[in-house]
Length: 377
Image 1: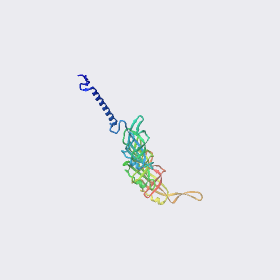
Image 2: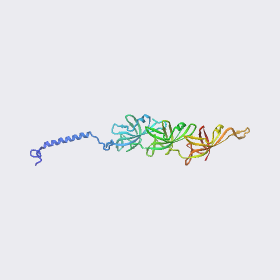
Image 3: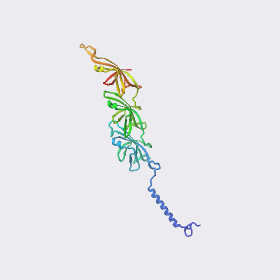
Image 4: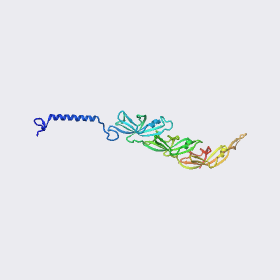
């Protein structure tokens, strides 16, 4: 059979001209359908994380600085910031820590971890219209608040902040009642999270109503490289730390890092103490067996008391100098067992190094006094 016969029919059935018209119509229809479908479609998300082949995900740590309570309460995980163009931000983790002293802008330091969608180019990661880099200022602008901070880290992964427990000893001075109120296990909580816990506390008398308090804390610190930070400051000797509960506030300086106990091993040291030119009533009030006790810990115990007339120097009319006993005033020598701590280089009492010639304060139940150390055994 001929493909096209003498009448111009294809296989003797369809006219060639008619067949060409049908093919042209089908081609136009297919091309139109392709154009319409292509114009309304977007790149699909094959990864399942909400991104498209044109977007990149990064995780940034932002330091939002010191903030007032209304901002601290308002910032929540899951908060989102949408841009006019492609890209958005979601807060994935929050660390809020108390600021020591008068905070510049508020009483709480805020660090947040954020998930960013943007684009990657030869210039780096582009969020909105800006290339992000460390140290750059950055504003988190949601429907509920706008907070300006700075970029501390940009990573390829990690929704959570890296938080460690860092032990420290903080020293402060408090009135006796506040010092007594501090208890092991007390917590400072911000946004329902524990940011600091008391693991040890020791109080020493400075005067009748003032105590030197050494507080062992575990701080929830954020980690960046080799540095641990708390309330926006590196945790190091001399750093000021705030701790608050519903019953008391305290602020102190870090005196030891890596432990919640003051340095040295506990020991007992016998000291000879001298008080000069005191009243007879004062001298008679000192007795063997009296103790200095703080927070149910015995810090000093008097073993012996030796009372002698105080010396008085007299000058005669002819210019001669005489040493005589004072008619009323007394000199007292005490032998006292002290609760001390021994380090490799120093002997410590009341949280301070001591040696012969130093003055120490004893706070007995009915009187507080200073005395000179004349001998240590």
